[in-house]
Each structure stands twice: as structure tokens, then as C-alpha cells.
Image (tube, rainbow, N blue to C red; front, side, top):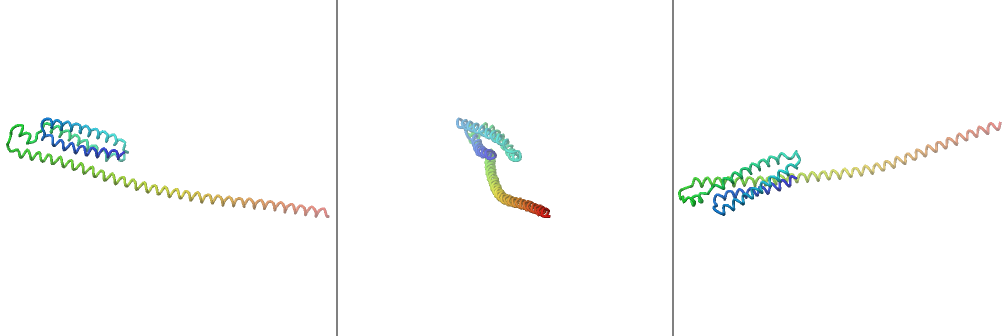
Length: 217
């Protein structure tokens, strides 16, 4: 189940990075171009929410002992989604310096506002970079966990095979021991039968000897 969760997670990271970039472009657009960009972002936000729902469902299928790490990641993604929606609302009513000057006919110096926009865009890019880096780190950790599981399974397989070989050897030894005990028991019975027969013969011989001795007198 964790593999499906991480697949949705990677799709979510790529999608939110695209959304962040488009939200940053909205203030620089006007007219139909801006409307189209807003529609595209709205559609992508809905897709991102659906991915979060899928991730939430997959997380519930993960064993309880491993669910804590995924719960923390889900909490972070939901906070990020809230932040994206807030940024999107602001971007719909915001204008870049160039667009504002064009609309208002203002040719004044707006370097401070431009610097603020640059800092805001830089921060967004850094957030996107951190998300991609976190996704890459998750992929590496997942690969390492998978390799560890495969190694454990291989070791368990070897142990099971050795146990089976020992059981076969034990069965073979038990079969040999059983045959030896059966032969010994058979010889004991034969010896006892011989002893009984010899005893009967000796007693019969003594009785005959006594009988003929008495009859001769």
C-alpha cells in the first residue's frame, strides 16, 4: 500500500510545483489570458485535492505501526494546499508592476514593489525546490526500505530451505533407526522362541528319562 501512496505523493509534488509557477504568473496577465490561466489553476487545484483524498485513503490501509510517518506528511501536504489556495486568491486580484502601470498610466518608479514581487517569486521557487527535494528524499528512503525488505526475504528463504533440508535428514535418520530397532526386536523374539523350545525339549527329555528309569526298575 505504501508504494501506491508514494506514487500519488510524487504526482502531487509535480502538480503543486506547476500550480505554484502558474499562480506566480497570474498577476502579470490581463484579459482573456488571465481568465484562462485562472481556470487552469482552478482545475489543477481540484486535481491536487483529489490526489490528497486518494493519499488519505491509501494511508488508512497502511499498518498502524508505519502510519505515523505518513500522517505527518499528509498534515504537511494539507497545510501546503491551504497556502496554495490563499496565494491563488491573492493572485487573482493582484497585478504586476508592469500591468498596473499600463492600466493606470503610471510611469513612476516602483522598484520597491518590484523587489517585493521578486522576493515573493523567489520564495515560491524555493518552496517548490524544497518540495521536489523532499520527494526525491522520500523516493530514496523508499528504495532503501524496499532493498532491506528484499534482503530480509532472501535471508528468510535461505533459513526455510536449510530447515527443510534438516527435516529431510531427520526423517532419513528416523527411518534408519526404525529399521534397526525392528530388526533388533525381531532377533530378540526369535531368541526367546528358541530358548522356550530348548526348555521344552530339555524338560521333555528329563521326563522321558525319569519314566524309562522307573519302568526299568
